[in-house]
Image (cartoon, rainbow, N blue to C red; front, side, top):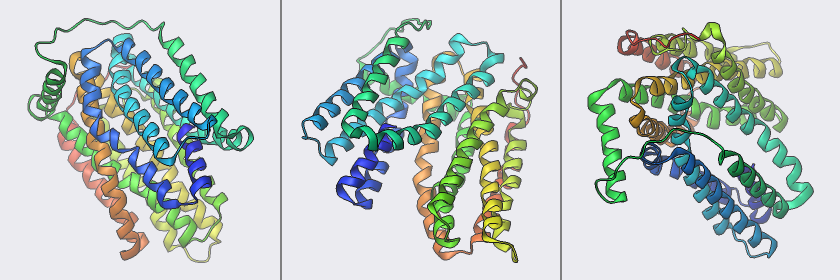
Length: 391
C-alpha cells in the first residue's frame, strides 16, 4: 500500500512518468544486493529479534516520512530513500520467514504453510492497491503514511510474542567478516555440496525471466496498444492474474495435491506451464471473433500460467526448507531469490525489444517451446529426487 500511495503522490506532484518508473526500479535493487546478506543474518541470529527489529526500523522510517509530510518538507528524493530502505529491510526479512517455518512446522506441513504464505502475499498485493486507491484521495498522503506506521507498530507488537527456537552461534571473527564467510558458504553449498539447488535456482530464474517479462511488459503493451482496449480491460487482466496467484496457493495446499508438489514432479508442472500459456499465442491467430473474445482468450493463458507458476514457486521453496540443513536454509533461500530477481530486468528489457521486432504469436509460442524444453531437462535433473511426505 505504501509504495502504491507514494507512487500516486509522486505522479500527482511531478507529473513525470520517468521519475515514477525510476523510483519503482530503484526499490528493486536491494532485492539483488542485500538478499544474500539477509540470508546470512537469518541463519546466524535470533529470527524473532530480526522480525521485531525489522518492523521497528520500518516504523521509524515511516514515522520520519510522515513527520516530513506533515511539515511540508518532503521531496521525491527523500521518498525514494525511504522506500529503498524499506525494500532493503523487507529483503532481509524474507529469508528469515522462510527459514523460520521449518522450526515451527513438521516437514509434512511445509507445503500447506508455504501455500498460506503465498496466498496472504497475493491478497496483500491484490487488495493493498485497492485500499490505497480509495484512502489516498480521501485522507491524503500525510494521514495515509501515518496509518501505515500504526500498522507496523501493531505488527511489531504481535511478533514480539512469537516463540521461535534459537541456538546461539559463536562468531569466530568480526560481524562483517562472519557474514561474508556465511554468504560464501551458502554459495559453496549450492555449487559444490548439493548442486541440485543451483540447478533449481537457475531453472526458476529462466522461467521467471520469461513469464515476468510477459506479465509486466507484454500484458499491458498488448492490451492497451495492440488491442487498443481500455484501462478497465487492463485492470481486469491484472485482477485475473492476482486471483490466479491466490488460486495457485490454494491448489497447492490441498491434501490430495501434496504428492504432486514435490521435486520429482517439477518437470510435470513446468510442462503444464508451457501448455496452458498457449492460448495467449493462439489469440492473435483468431479471425472473425470480437475483440472482447480475443481479449478473454489472451488473458486466459496468463491466468492459468500464473496458477501453475504459483505452485512451482511453492514447490521450489518447500524443497529448500525440507532438504537443506537448518543452518543453511536462509542462505540458500536468499541466494535463490537473488539469482531469480537478477534475471527479471534482463527479461523485461529483452521483451521490450521482442515486442517491437518480432511477431506477437512467435514470441508466445517460442516461450512455450522453451518452457517445454526446460521441462524435459528438469525431468533428467530432478525426477529421482525424494518426495515430500503427505499430510
